[in-house]
Image 1 (cartoon, rainbow, N blue to C red):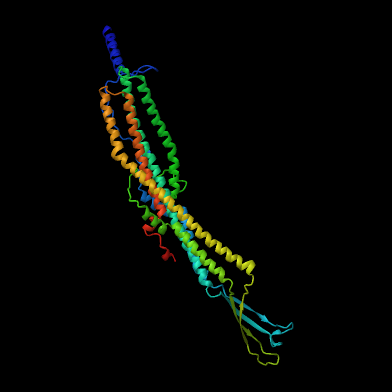
Image 2 (tube, rainbow, N blue to C red; image 1 turned 135 degrees about the vertical axis):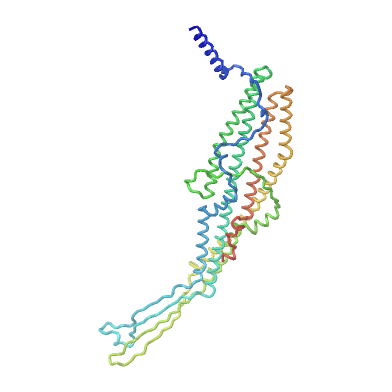
Length: 470
C-alpha cells in the first residue's frame, strides 16, 4: 500500500512538471514584459508577405489580356461599333433617287352607262413619275452622309481608346493598392519584431516603456493602413470590372501584376504632332466641320428647283359605231418653285453656316485642350520618372544602409530605439513613395496614349482606316 502511494505522488509531480514547462506565463496589465531567452535570426530582416491569401492564390493577369477582353465584351465599345455600322449604311441611300410613283386610273369618263366608248377623251391611263434633284444635290447628300460616317468612325476609335485608358488606370491603381498592402504587411512584421526586442530590453532594464509604446503605436498604424487599403480596393475593382464589360455576376476582379516601370521616350513636339494628326476626337471634329461645309453647299443648292418627270399611257376603247380610237402617250416635266427665301431657304442656309462655324470653333477649342493636357501629362511623367530614379539609385539605398547601420549600433547599445524605429519607418515611406511614383508614371503614359490617339485596336488591325470605311 505504501508503495502504491509513493508511486502516485511521483507520477503527480511528474505531470505537474510537464504542464508547468508547457504553460506560458501571463503578463498582467501594466507589468513588465517577460524576458525572451533568444532573439529570432530574422530580427531585422524584411521578410516578404502577401497582402491576403486570396490575392496570393490568384494568378496575375497581364494588361494586354484585359484590353483584348474589353475590345470583345465592353458594351460601350459594342454600342459604338453598331453606331458606326449604322452610319456606314446611310451613305448609299443618301444619294439614291426617290421612289418612282406608279399611277393608274380613268380619265374624262362621262357619267353614263358604258362610259368608255361614249366620249373621245375617255381613256384608261397608267403612268410613271420620277423626281430628279437638281444636278449636284445627290452628290452633296452622299458627301454629307460620308462625312457623318467618318466622324462616327473616329468616335468609335475614341471610345475604344478611352475605355482602354480607364482599364489601364484601374489596373495600375489596383496594382498599387495590392503592392502597398504587401509593403504594409511586410513592415508590420518587422515592427512586430522591433516590438518584441523593445519589450525584452525594457524587461532587463536596457530600454524604457516609451520604446514599447512607440513600437505598439506603429504596429497599430500599419493595421489601420491595411484597413484603409481594404476599403479602397473594392471601389477600384468595381471600376476595373465595369471597364472590362463584365456583368454584375462577376464577383472577383482580375489580379494585376506588381507595378513595373515601363520607361518610354517622351518628346513633347513629336507627341504634339501625333496628337494633332492621330487623335480620333480631333479627326472627328474635322470630319464634322467638313460635313457641315457640305451641308452648307447643299442648303445653297436648295435655291434651285428639282424636276418631276412623268410619263403616262392612255388606252381608249372603240366608239359606239365601232370606229377605232388610237391610244395616247403623255410626257410632262414639273419643277418646284423655291420662292420662300425669307421663311424657309434663308434660315436653313444660316443654320448650316452656324453649324459649320460651331464645328470649327469646337475643333480649335479641343485642339488647345489636347495640347495643354499633353503638356501636363508629359511634365507629370517626367517628374515621376525623375523621382523613381532618385528613389532607386540614391534615396532607398541610402535609407537602407542607414537602417543597417542603426541596427548594428542598436545591438551594441550605441543607439536608442526611437532612432532605429524612425529609420525603419523612413525606409517604409520611401518604398511606398517609389511604387506610388511608378503607378503615377504608368497612368501618365496611359493618358498620353489617349491624347495622341494610340489605339490598341488599330495596332491589332481590327480598326479600318477612314479610307477603307468609305
